Image (cartoon, rainbow, N blue to C red; front, side, top):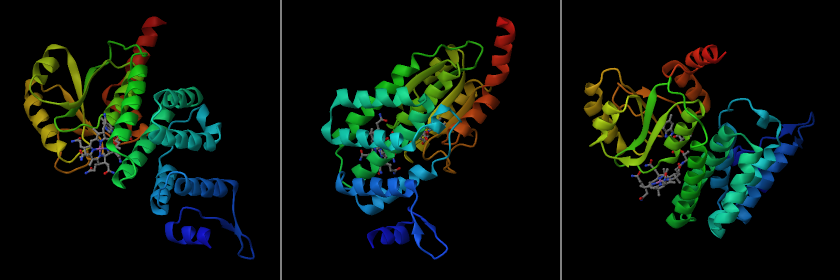
Length: 293
Ligand code: B12
């Protein structure tokens, strides 16, 4: 009865029907049900929170095709559950080894978009529901920031690409999304200066004009940060009309955002398109290969 109620009310488990109208549960349906049950029993979440998380996971857009697509989806769930447990055990070593496993099993993009991003959203849900403290959330954010930053240094950059500054404007403390986009640029060989959270406009002008920066990327998660993102473009844009400005993040579609910003979507596929268009990655890569070849 409970399963049917979950199906009716939350629409997350939708079994096929036999000709006679009986429900036919697939292996995936069963795994989803077990996952939901675990969220309730082990993590003390409500069915509506767990169902929302499951829907979000299922609705997340497919990312670039990698070897990952052949791997069992259950490993992704297991890793996320193990990370979830670390919110309560707060064991840094174990958390790092879970992330080690994730990075060894899946590609960097996959770990960032399919594991870390949805997991952090879950952390936010739990925090909002009073089930996770700010200290637990900080613990996870700090470890994840360290891990992404660690990979950041491993990619060489190519000076033919436009040098890029990535920052969160004043009042914006959420920096993991900006770091993920920086990582993505860096992986494509772009020289990124990552300034991180809560960057005031004062002093940026000299950095941007004196160091050959050609692209400025801003992350706007909080509505309150829109004003500082707009102040930034108002002050910096007139210094060099050739500079291009980009905006991403949860509130980047807000109509209050200065229209000179080029909007970048949330997903990997959008990012690919933007960098090939505005950083001309494939074009320059061709030139480099021609040169080397
Ligand atoms: C971690 C966290 C924090 C940490 C951030 C640590 C850090 N170093 O980054 C700290 C403790 C600082 C924090 C503070 C606050 N937080 Co907080 N936080 C979160 C949490 C749990 C996760 C954020 C995160 O990292 N998500 C994962 C990343 C990958 O997702 P993302 O940032 O959305 O990025 C994705 C896209 O948006 C996009 N993206 C993001 N930036 C960019 C940039 C570019 C250029 C591009 C292309 C794409 C892009 O790409 C990413 C992948 O898809 C969220 C929950 C949630 N739903 O996200 C709440 C959440 C965002 N926080 C919230 C709140 C309310 C706060 C506080 C006000 C709490 C308080 N009372 O103090 C403060 C505000 C601080 C501020 N002024 O910015 C709310 C925001 C609600 C709202 N109004 O929008 C959320 C949604 C929690 C909730 N459920 O209520 N938070």
